[in-house]
Length: 325
Ligand code: PEP
Ligand code: MG
Image (cartoon, rainbow, N blue to C red; front, side, top):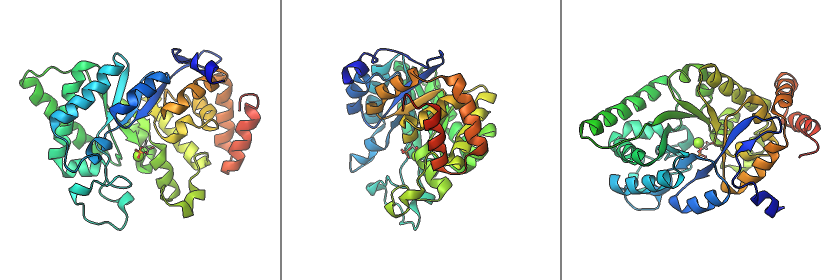
């Protein structure tokens, strides 16, 4: 079976009825590159840049970051690479930043909130990214966006750095700018956000946690961590519909994107890109090749209109595609 999967390594990803999607990889560091290419990634849908900052006892310099980003972008070229700006705080503290202790770090100063509050760190990361953009197909993504003001501020800072580098004649490539949709407020307002970004990527790890009001790292409330909960599925569907209405692609980079029960539903909803850990890519490519996207649209409709619990959703999916699950 592993051998059969390996033959899919150099294939694109197409459903049984001919619908193409992109299967991308989530990466943490440049060390992940050989493994994701080995596993047939068509793109990088999420590079978490936190590790560059956490694997050290001080902030990485702009040049150190540039070298790392360039290597990733170059290794994948011409395939796209989505690099996410710093997402510290919450489950990813940075010891040397000496953040004030917070009663609720997941609801505190994390991700884009930190970047907007410490603009020197954010600007240095954006400059490193812009310089790396000359070497391939780079997309920049902002994490934990909750309001349009945050998005507009982040984009204004990005534009400002780009303008300065242009004036200094620094070579840069075309860069698409997008956001993660992982805060329920952004999911509800996805139609508005979609007017102001080039792409959206759904971060289900946090979206599930915030929607169910359950800390993703607290096992005592682990039972609430339900990717197939109808409330989550309605939000996900809403985001995809909003993106497509605005003419932009929608990706997912949370764990859910590689989950075999979720994949048929996501395909039926029209998700454009599935980004996951390297180990899930070939299995997901095989699963999608056996699914009929058109038929799954009616499964999605039934699920969204009539399922009340996660268990009901699972039962419906298993009944709809019994031969592949
Ligand atoms: C997510 O929240 O789904 C996500 C991909 O980001 P992270 O797991 O890094 O918070
Ligand atoms: Mg997240």
